[in-house]
Length: 107
Image (cartoon, rainbow, N blue to C red):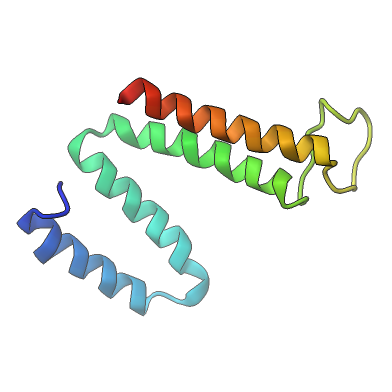
């Protein structure tokens, strides 16, 4: 599906907008994530697995960056504390490397 196709403009986009506005606030982000997978999987269903992998990497790296989670193998035995600046930098680098590697491979 392409953004300028009639399937997207007249079917998919109105459906997504309608679902978005009738969905409760707390379920809007997961709804858009699932519908994004549908959009990217429309051309080739294998792309959904790449999107899921990228989403999971970015989600966990984002949790480390915001301090909600720490990287266990960098801090042995320490739990309940925020991530250190070194862990946050590692998470940023890991996220960037994974995403740029995917982009480089498929471009």
